[in-house]
Length: 76
Image (tube, rainbow, N blue to C red):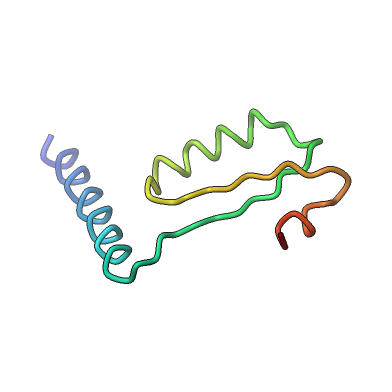
């Protein structure tokens, strides 16, 4: 029980430190992802959900692309 609670406290401390840095610098982390239309979206969004659980303050923009249009989408 102590180990489990300790991990919870450490995770909360890390989130607090990340939030403090964001507030102090005025920057919010942002990730842009280009998703090819032929990719299995269920797998992608399952992985994305796990990522967002670990990084709740991260803003994520997902753009669907067709026929290797990913580079153009990310440049916009």
